[in-house]
Amino acid sequence: MRNWKLYLKKLLPLLPRQRVQPCVKQKELGCMKEKRIMAGRAENMSWKKTVFLSALLCGLAGGVLPQARAEQITGAGSSFAAPLYQSWSAHSAAQTGVQLNYQTIGSGAGQNQVLAGTVDFGASDAPMPHARLEAGHLLQFPTAIGGIVIIANVPGVPEGALRLTGPVLAAIYDGSITQWNDPQIVALNPGVTLPDLPVAPLHRADGSGTTYVFTEYLGRVSPTWEKQVGRGTSVAWPVGAGARGNDGIASYVKNTEGSVGYAEYAYAERNHLSTVVLQNRAGEFVVPSVNSFTRAAENATWDQADMTASLCDADGAGSWPIVTTTYALVPREANEANHGNAVRTFFRWGVKDGEAASRELDYVPLPATVRDAVLERLK
Image (cartoon, rainbow, N blue to C red; front, side, top):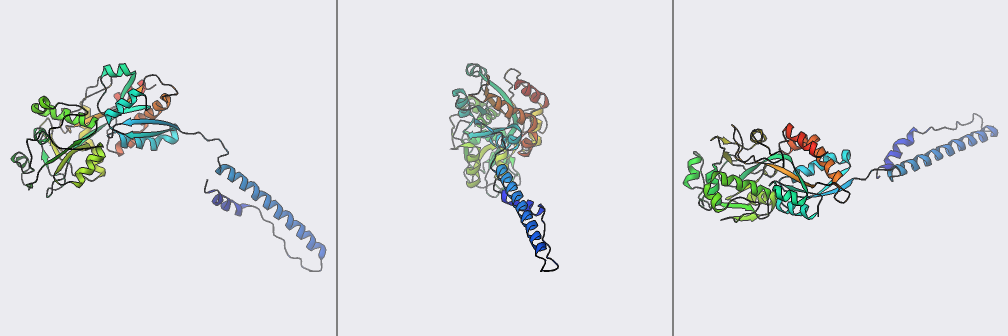
């Protein structure tokens, strides 16, 4: 709209102009009169064309031609999935006519809001149990796969040099290990000088699917953790401080020496945080990457009814041990009130055409067979 004057300026030089040539003899008044008449006609024609073009351009700029308005949908939940859904919205709006307003409030709150009908869809990294899906008349399906990484701020330790095992990580979070130069950590890191500095474990303060996956992992590698704490979107943490959202965890670790936390990989990358090299089930020390997340996803077994899979502590060489699927939850019956058709259009585009955007943000697209099953469910 603001550029119509520029368009007009570019078009004006293209208008035909007629010049009045001076009479050879000034006394030939008839010639001069005729030339003046011709000039007046040319000027009048030019003015009329200018007015016409101005009106045309103003009409276009003012939106006289009908334009389709984007349909607004609202989603809420997982901070793990937030960068992905926001990217899908930005890339797809022009094609789908759907625009997303997404609230990053954590998986637990996202599940509650879609059950209450206050949003058009919920997003969760923790799958909703089958009985709850049935009671809420909800459809659940996966949208992408990603890695949860351990981030640490340990002075004097080079980026990416710190190694931990699952049991040692669990001991940090249950309070058994309190110093960075604890003998168990030192034994895993020959040649690395670890400071005599308290360990400050950090966890999510909000109900979180990322927490669900992280505590599931700790329970698999530590019987003590499984017995005393267990798993969930929110648990009774033995030690440590809390922060809200993946971004809150990342910010805290970035600014607090001695701290350690867990977050979705994209948040670690975006904040240039040092990630821990973690031992997997095969006994390998693995660097977190899209490749190691993909290795874990390749060995997953999917539940066809609720379209869920556990990728935690997966088998396979090169597998990163803390990988999760993120899920969308939508009402089974699509209607005007819940923008059901627009929500399905958005996710069909994301699952089918949003793979490049997923990879750009270091998520792993769904395996082809799972993707096709999701598209079939969204018809």
